[in-house]
Each structure stands twice: as structure tokens, then as C-alpha cells.
Length: 421
Image 1: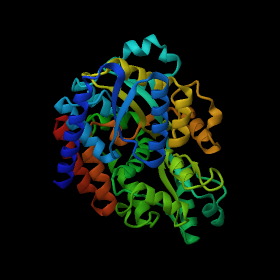
Image 2 (image 1 turned 90 degrees about the vertical axis):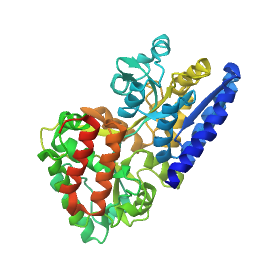
Image 3 (image 1 turned 180 degrees about the vertical axis):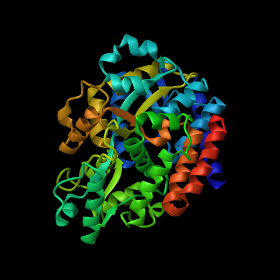
Image 4 (image 1 turned 60 degrees about the vertical axis):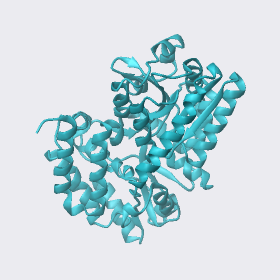
């Protein structure tokens, strides 16, 4: 209740500022975003300052923490109090707001500037199109993989990384024997655990089944989902995870890997931006390997989010807002600042690939070689369903033995969200 009250106060404060600016013509643009981490905030501030210097348009931005943003932006959309632009995660979350009528299509902007020649077709198709129209400008994307401490691996005698599930478990046994906990997971805010569910499902049941589950066309009590939880539970039962995952956030898990308490963590490429900020060097102090194959013959899918910006349907400064949208994607200097500062991959094909360090360059190659780019769980299904799934993952990490009950509870949420029985 206290958190909800804080959010409502924040919404009222923001709403009290933005309407006043609506009377100031096109010399302003209002922006909300969830990039509150030190490196992301610094990078975005630099980009915004350059835009203001080049255009004379003043940006009023309101950063809100990642978790609070999810609720705040939906409350503002429902109340018709959205800013001109806001950052959002491509996939089901944008679809949810598009379906509410709160966003403005940007097809004219897209076509007039030949953005099909700027954004790779795989990202343009999956991240920008909703109900047949363009709504999102991609700003950066990430890839989730196993990020590890090379010194810990070397000390355990590990020089080759697993391509299969059996090899992965053998590597974990080797790490345990060397006195190191193999896996760190900081699931305090629930979402970091989703990558385990995503990859276990994609590597066994495949992308088509996973898409059906995300759309409410399959059940959380299906044998395919039960198998995922059994595979996950086996890892927990063997002591591969640092205990009490729900007591830590993702940066705690990153720290556990960096200081050698754990060997690796399954996380997005933004962890490289965090570690770079701690003074760690790619390849020397951290590196990555992809999630291994579990069942042969299943298409190779990679998981990650696409961060973008969208324009509200009732934007008070639509011309300035579109200028900023275009700048964020097409200005290669801005894209490079963001990619390096945030640990992101650029959706702009004109960005010089030499900006990437060796780890990020190989991450980009891994994405390019995959059969499918899948949005992570909470971006692949509707926000109400995502809440039910994230609760499932948190309960599982607290007590894996109850997974059958949790799946039945999650399916009950799915029935409420999607209908059916």
C-alpha cells in the first residue's frame, strides 16, 4: 500500500508539470524513462544535451526506477497523462498500450526517413510493428547469456565451455568440487529469474510452443512446462545456485561473480556496462558463453529485450517529439554513446562495430547466428500475465519443492487473463 501511495504521488507530481509545458509550443518535449542506473543516466544525459545543443529544443525528462516505472506508466496511460515520449520495452508491453489507444503510430516518420534501411529486418519486424503499424523506435537491445569470471573458471581447470546440458552440469560439478558455487542469481525483483524459465523452455519445447504459452494458447500445467521446472529444480537441489536468491538483486549477483563467490550468472549484456563501471576489463575479468543445447533439433533461440521510445497519442509537442525519436535512432554518435555506456547492442546498422569490445562483439555475433530472437518472459506476454509468471519464478526460488502448486496457481492467472478453463 505504501509503494502504491508513493507511485500515485509521483504520478500526480509528474502530471502537474507536463500539462503546463503543453502551452509552451514546440520548443519543449517531455520524456519519461526507466534508465536510472548511473551509467545509463549519464549516457542519456549526454545524448539529451547534444540534442538540445543541435536543435534548441529543451527536454524535460523524468527518470523513474525500473520496477516503479512498470506501474506508473500504465496508471498515466489510463489517466491520459502520458508525456510526449517514454521509453518502453518492445513486445507485449507495447502491444498492451497500443491496444489501449494511448500511442501514436509513427509510420510517416519511419517511411519518410527510410528507417527500413537503418534497422535490421529481424528487429524492425518484431519490435516496431503492432497491429500492422509502426509504434516504437528501437534505441538498444540486449542478449542474455552466461557471464562468468575467467579467473574462477581457470582455477577450477575449466578451459572449454559447455555446448550440451550434460556438459553444463559436469562443469557445475567441477566448480563445486573446487569450492566455488557455480551460479549466482539475484531474484529479489523477480525478473532476473525469468531467463532460466525462458531458456529451459526454448531449448526443450521450442519457440513455437513458447509463443503459444505466452499467448494463452497452452497451459502452465502442460508436460512441457512441468519438465522445465524439473530441470530447473535439479540444478537447485544439487546446490548449483548461491542460496537465498530472492535476498539479492541482479547487481548483488554480478558482484558475487566478480569477487569470486560464484562462477557465473545468467544475465543480459547490460551487466557488461555495470562491470565496466566497476573497472573490470572484458575478457580478462569477465566473459560469456551461450546457454547450451538441451534437446537436439530444437531451433536455436536467443533471449533479450529491445529498449525503445514511443510517442503518446495525445503528445503536446508532436513535432519536437518526432525530432527526438529520429535523433535517438539515426544519430550514430548518440547510438555509440548509448551502446558503450549501457552495455547495449545498437539497432542501427550504420554504427561502427569497432565501438564494441571483444565480449560485446561476440555477443552480437551470437545473436546474428541464432534462428530466433525471443523477448524475455515479462516482455513476451501481457503485463497482467507477466506478474503471475514472475510470482511463479520467485516462489520457485524460495521453495522449489512446491513447483506443481505454483504452476497450477499460474495457470489460474492465465485463465483470468486469457479466458478458457
